[in-house]
Image (cartoon, rainbow, N blue to C red):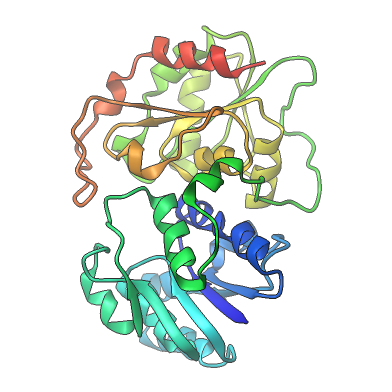
Amino acid sequence: MKIAIVKLSALGDIVHAMIVLQFIKKYNQEIEIDWIVEERYKELLEFHPEINKVHVINIKKAKQKKSIYLFLSELYKLRKLGSYDLVIDMQGLIKSALIARLIPSKTTLGFNKSSIRESFASIFYSKTFDYGYDKNVIERNFEIVKFALNVPYNFEDVKYKLPFLYFQKKYSNLAISNNKTNIILIPGASFSSKRYPVKNFAELTYSLDANYIIVWGNDEEKLLANKIKNLAPHVNICKKLSIESLIYLISQADLIIGPDSGPTHMGWALNVPSITLFGSTPGHRNSLVTSDNKIIESNSDVNPYRINKNDNSIKDIKVEAIVKIARTLLP
């Protein structure tokens, strides 16, 4: 059987979807799995031993350049992928549904119109699955694959998952300490109200004796990292990392602390202890709490159907609350 998974972006969303791979292969090693993804996230998937082939698409680039020709060229590539027994759209957007439909297949599966934010997307599927949009995203990913393939496992089995992010080589010069606890701080997120205040991050570094490493992905996040270092000169700011080197760095850490963002969720994927901070987004939906992976939510009443990007309640999370949990997770 040959299947294709459509999950285009973003970093954390792809990580939350990748959990399904080990359960598909555990069920049937003979199933061949391809993945369709935006080009900038290819590195997250290309070293995964359970993925047969990663197909990249540049819809975002076409949109940025406002090029109809580029957009149609990208869509045309999908017709040349060959035929699949099943295509699963795990994104649930109009663009991902259209992409899934254009891939030659016997069945195109996605969430039904009441289970996705862009309900119009459901018309592109030949088969749909009903699972509430407000439910946990990892659970939604697991359940649609279980429905599609009749996989004989339950969501409870995710508690016993194997780490599922991979790198091909080890990286040096990442400020990893061999004699101190390594804590990675992540100041960046996709929008400002998801970010924890830099002064609180700085205060945190004086509360726990550790080697602190700050990661960043763009100029705005680098500025946040520099602001933390101005307040806490003992922290280390990492160089700009590729996705592969970020996976390696997180795999070497003792603890990850950050907001609802891709690098923080990578800690969960690698079975590395983590504390994820939630303000304007729903922690119960966007993460999975385990013995090693904890969350702290603000007191904000979050509506997963309509995120309030002006909700800055993450700033109300006390440093003391983070320190208290960190001490239970650190060796």
